[in-house]
Amino acid sequence: MSTLIEAFPDEVSLMIFARVPLYLHPRLRLVCHAWKAVVNSVELFKIRKEVNFVENFMCVCSYEPEKIWQLHDAQHDVWITIPVLPSSIRHLSYFGAVSTAGKLYVLGGVRDSKDDITDGRLCTPATNQVWSYEPVTRRWTTCAPMIMARTKFACGVLDGKIIVAGGFSNSFHRRPIKQAEMYDPKSNSWIPVPDLPLTHNAPCYGAVVREKMHVLHKELPTVQILDNETQVWTVSESSWRNYPLAVVGDDVYVMCGEKIYHENQVGGEKQRKFTASGYKSKSGFGMSSLGNSIYLIGGNELRGKIFRTQKYESPGVAVLTVSLEERWALHEAKPMTHCRGTILGCTPLRS
Image (cartoon, rainbow, N blue to C red; front, top):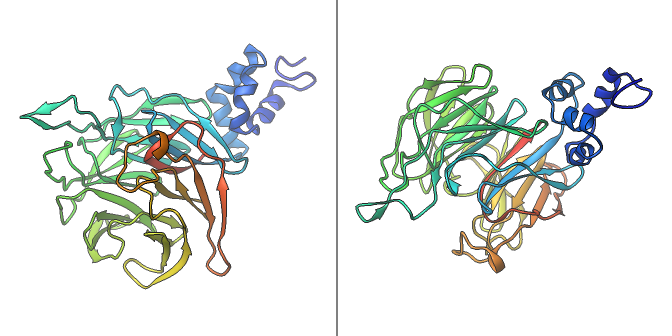
């Protein structure tokens, strides 16, 4: 007789547990101690990999409440609140967020606080901390720290490895960082990669397009591109600039005002594809892609009112299904249940 499910051997029971969606795991934990142990086990994570049971999530972190992440299960349209990031840094902001190997990674950043004053001015040093979160076991784990502490930097995933580049070493003294580095999740180690050819006194962000890392600085017309095979940076012109963007397949979608444009190449010809009514008056919203959909997440209803809550908060989520041939489909996903205000990080996760 099985100790997990009556009439089934434990091996078969584990196969059944492995196919239960994550949003139902809290209910499984309440059944008995044996089920709770299975649901929280590393073994279940391994079996999910063996049976190739994969779920897709959009991971979101906002200014309110601090250090809270939620995962949106697109298939079942439910939000899952995960354990609080155990970092000791209060109100961690301007960090990098990516996913690879079935885990969410939170990298670097700076404390958004007015408690640290240097020479009468706000100056908070960046961190080189790196955290990973595994959704099945619901555990945060500290990873090898970045070689350099940085904030407001570019990050992306190439061939399963995390690339970070640029940014600043603290929140006030704008000394741009030219160094770039790469993290291998398998070895839990960082190695340097070639420096950026150009540095700018402006925050930067990253996008991976056609297996190449793109680094863009806000308000500047240039993009720096890293070829993963040659490990060489090239500099090109780009029309992306300071606009929110999402990458679907090999295509880039840029949001300017309320209009979303499809760009068939970096800095190339643009074609208007959709008008997202209401987002012209928003600030601090997140834009990312999951599969063939673009997410427009949260933010604040009044321009310039960032880092506000109450009437300015917007937990709403719009999902656009992208098609190059057909008319786009728009639907409202269920609103976030905890996250409010400015979106600090959003990234897709396949686990």
